[in-house]
Image 1 (tube, rainbow over the protein chains, first blue to last red):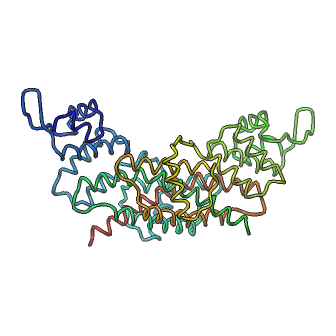
Image 2 (image 1 turned 30 degrees about the vertical axis):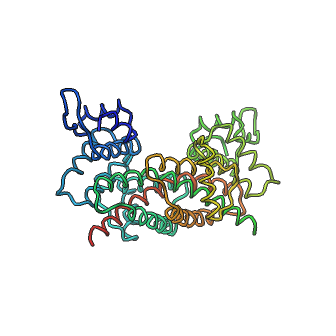
Length: 203
Length: 203
């Protein structure tokens, strides 16, 4: 297909497609003349993935390059590939002190969760716990345990929806499911709070 | 106590305490001389609540005034009081079209959740669902149901931690629990994803 058709099929504006080509985020098409190239279905899928990484995941171009290099490395097991993408989706890795990290690790150990020491969300968890303590409302272990059970239920369905055969589609799914389902979970939590509160008020 | 002690006890900087007094967010102390006033424990608690609303909840001063007026209205049932605070904690109520709202309402009806039509998070849910559909990954009902079950577990512990006798403390708890526990839930979800992914990779 022509580059214009590629733009239409992928839903990515033509100027953006050209930009991704210049930046090397999309492989060149097969030249059919001095000024024309032909693109195929693989280009459509790569474009959708790049757009998901940039627009949904908020990744910078350097991070997108890293993720795509991991994707194109056939030696890399899918778990490590998805982990590499997943870790880069942490918007901000907060600076936390050792005491806060130790507190978070104690919870993770109690839960029996195996988490890489470099996982950015170990620090995000430590920061979230420290913020509650700082305003005089520390989170008790029973609350963490319930939140963790809920998080595990959600993670199970998240992972179940990731295809095991198509690495590019799997990565797209991880990026979209991780980032776009966050507002979904938060909205449902707030609506559930309203629902439970109304039920309690009726007693 | 003196205003300087009030600042220390509440952990709010003196300049901020004076600002809240000028803005009418904190009742004046009892005058003990022409230039001095005495403050009590009620002032400390009100200050902590105002700080939670402003710093944690991100509420504008006009919204803080509304919430405090609701708090000081003894006729208002606690459920409506907390609902008023809760609804104002929606950072942004997105504009969504009727089709997106109808889709969200269909899920809420299936779940049997009673939600006020004006609840801001009905629109946040509609927007989150529409965003997934827009990138070609619509959320299926089974996924929503699991997310909703998880959200309900979390909401039950959230509400259980809200005291029923002290309205000011209840409101502080709602604000802090609603806002500060969000990063906690999201961090745990991402850590759970890593944990489940590692488990699946081992098979």
